[in-house]
Length: 324
Image (cartoon, rainbow, N blue to C red; front, top):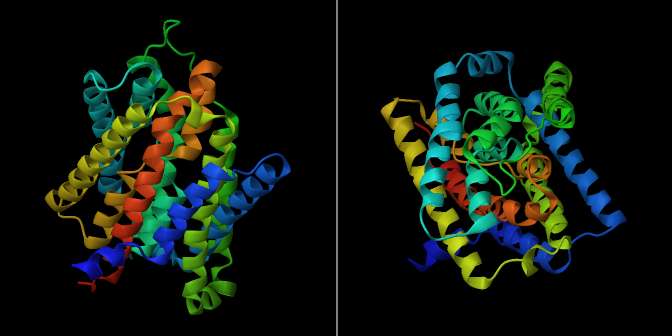
């Protein structure tokens, strides 16, 4: 039993927790915030470049054609999550902007880089994960503001929804373009990438740590921890844990009900249970009054850290299981 408990705290998990603590007590400021932001973006670009170089053309085509899997991820992201969000916010456990933030969390698209990284660590269908996660983010640029306008109401009668072309450009330039370029260069560098699998793993995990530190640190600089009480934070933390547990169980159960392969089930598990901090923070800045943004994104930030830690453990366990 002791070995199982200690096994959870592998170096990556400890490093992830340490990164959150470091961002809380020593967040990047000024020029350092810009440096870490640029470094995190570079890590994401490199991650997708390497995945593109590693995947075969047949694997990509098979992943793109798997519409049943993609639809299941879509339903989990934009139907199951919002229903749970409405149910949670109907309970008298949180008030004001924090409750609104919890509902806002459930309306966001799935993560991209961490979903694919965890799918890779768990030895799932990375090509399908790229398609599902990218599709979720692209459609979320329009669908998330629409859901916010439909389901949420601010004190001023409803947030002013807007769509930024910068979000579209970020997805195209930081995710899809590096993947395509890497794949086109596969005949040249594919063999080298295959011989250096540890490099891909390092980029997977390193990109997650960089994004966590840069994004979490930026919110801490804005004084986030001075705006919420300890009891509210504890209740919100428990709500996020329960929400994630329900969705993880639901997506894994749905994969079995749909008789998906193990590789595709892993995609549904990770892409269908995640919410994007990278998309949530800028969207909140557009959709809500400036005074509310800090508290609105708090549930997103907490859920993001919880999902990273939980999915890191799950991905590691799945990756260690024998195939077949």
